[in-house]
Image 1 (cartoon, rainbow, N blue to C red):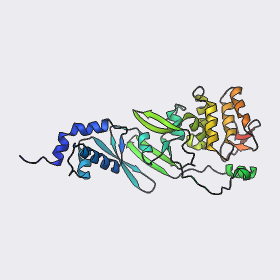
Image 2: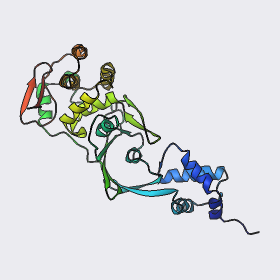
Image 3: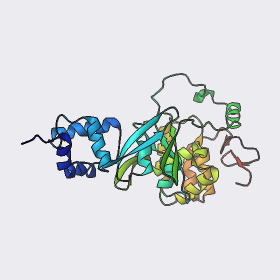
Image 4: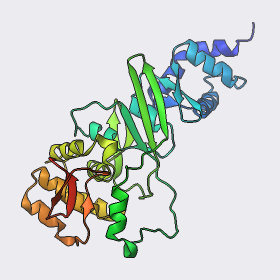
Length: 302
């Protein structure tokens, strides 16, 4: 009796192979992932020990178990094997390990906007740094704040491009934010897959800090308005305190809460903070107005 080929064994056990992917907690895979899966299936005697990775991958593609995507990174192209129809968000967070969805993507997924952003935002926190900072709390001066906010907001140039099909093209902004120990990072279920994402409270903080990553200050205000009844302001302030910013972003948060119509009892929670500096709602504003209560400059007519 002739010996069964490696490919024939995979054909015979095709249902077992499909079942593996059906029961997995993800739908996107790297080259290394497919090698690991192949070894697991060998151990389970679903495929032969002599099966080569190229043969295994070819079998998966030929039988339409997995499909193949390319993602254009700033300096190179990376690829992913996908099972079924994963969301663009799963593909985005799969680019970098330990990344999570943030900013406008989190705003959208928490139902805080009516827009459908084509820009996807992920964040990977930097390693903890122990070095002198020119913005040490004892050294913060009004002239330095004025200078920093007279300039454009710094924006990442780490942008990937992903084409799902002819009508679905996305830019993925791969942020490399300050290390906050992933405070305020949770999970969200998207089509049965759990993905890491900033909580609604952390999301509001992030977009206050970087409004351009959420469509601008008007979108930030809309998000605060939509967040009524969905957030705990006490929890938001707890996350803010743990993030330990040097700049007084609590002034901006209080300003947004007031503009969004939150009750005075909520605004009184900000009495714990000392307001020492004039601050800015966003960067490089030309025509400004000033809130005496929060000592915040904001765009005229906002």
